[in-house]
Image (cartoon, rainbow, N blue to C red; front, side):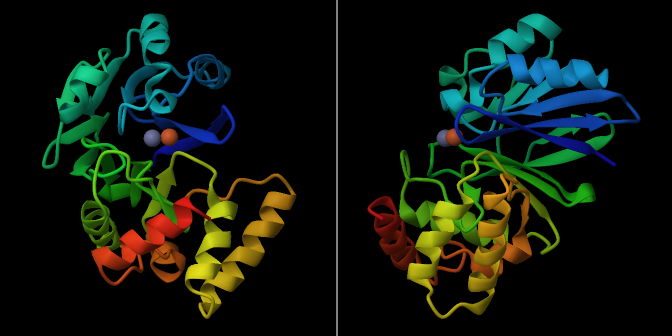
Length: 240
Ligand code: ZN
Ligand code: FE
């Protein structure tokens, strides 16, 4: 069983520190910064051996160099973005597998937020690390891709088992939910979820990971019936 620790950094990023107890390997998903990540690993007596990057944005790779310098870890990230992530050791794409000890992740191509964005799906653990592609009740902005690509990503992720835990990289849930209620005002599951989210945020609690089932019930981007509807909703959310 993987141990997955949430490290809140910057204004709203989550870095995931992932420990595999049999091999004692420890991996970091999308380190925005280095210091809090190194400190958390140190506190737990874990040695960071790997970093997995989902995309090149600085709030996902900014800690790469310093963590590699401090630990000698191995960095895996999107082949299509290798020019923008100079610290990479291994470049991967859809169909490739990445290992943490004996735990295997399948790489998924999920372009749109960035052109080479990938996700890491650990099927045996029902876990997916999605970076900035899927958020609780939201999806990533379309910086380098199209609504049609994001629609395909949502369809692909929605086919994972419902119990799959979704580890996204930002605490955007409340703002996403406020827009989601406008997109789907009659969605009862969404209304109930938003009440729980508001209560959690009022206490300063995190609202991720989420699950594929919960997103399928409440996420207006995963629930969009066409690329056109996703495009309309994305534009509306951008201007919300
Ligand atoms: Zn990003
Ligand atoms: Fe980000």
